[in-house]
Image 1: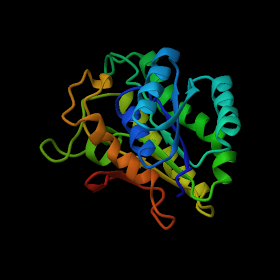
Image 2 (image 1 turned 180 degrees about the vertical axis):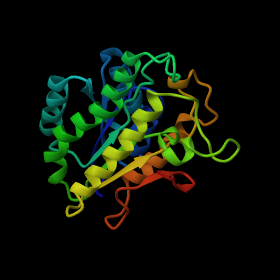
Image 3 (image 1 turned 120 degrees about the vertical axis):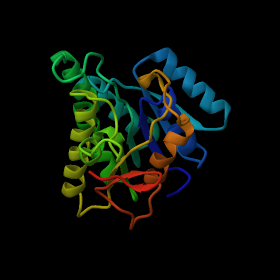
Length: 243
């Protein structure tokens, strides 16, 4: 990929998303900082630029059709296209999520951002990605989306709390990742899911044990895969995550 590779990172104004943008920008890429909040978005852009990153703001609400369409047009007009899409924006959906006491609205909120929002952004930007020489799509998932780990016996690799919102939304995101990889198998677009590990962000009340920079590493690796790299996979720093 050339130094003028263009990336869009959703939810890039803070946490893991910001560190992904910083990491890709350090490679000499142009990076679109996708975020809903104008103040936070522009503050992130200013900080990235001060660090030497060629960053620009992309107003983006992944739950809004018009916002996503406008973002795709902005990428075309401001950057001339798109090479790499990192779908990082995500929410827990709120509480309660435990089976037997869950709020359906919580489930709906998680799926709307973590799944439908990703589909919405991919569909809007796919025409741009198809024109790229080495396009990549990275969907930020989570180990709690692994059905294998969720169903493991206690004390094995069982992961995450009981949840009928956030965890299943990441499982569905994994399934969506596979579907796009299958559909695009005869193209040069590589589509993969990434697990950042238990990272300290506001999503989990900063209880995580990894830094946002550490959490961003796997996404940066998947965003920079060689042309013969894997597609349709689920990866963390240690390697492949079981579905």
